[in-house]
Amino acid sequence: MTNDLITWVNQEILKRGWSRREVARKCGMSHGNINLILNENHPVSLKFCLQMAKAFNRPDIEMITLGLLPNTAENEPYKQAILTLTNIPNTTKLSPLELISIFASKK
Image (cartoon, rainbow, N blue to C red; front, side, top):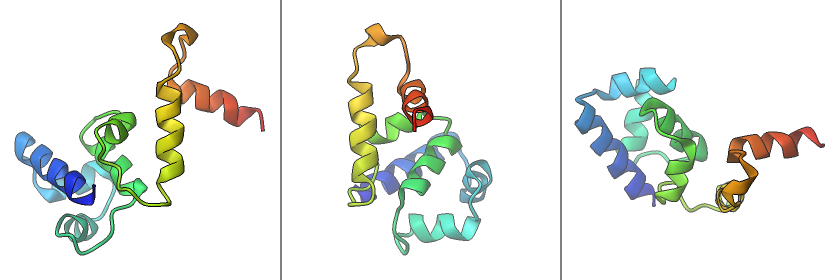
């Protein structure tokens, strides 16, 4: 999945005619870190995946539903939680993020 994410990011950069510096600025990462990850010299994290969603103005959930979140033990609980929330029937009229907020406030 890491290669899929890197391929997706590179395609998005090309589609928009952006530089890696511009992506770094939009997602709040250093240009050096962007290069390390996109040159496959650094592991991809959940944080990077979500920062790319932010940079390209895409919903976080899209990164998971497209299978772009790297398959690591660390990411598995996030993937399962988000996929479970997205399968809740629309009759609740609440978004997955709103449901998470409700559950978090009941600690």
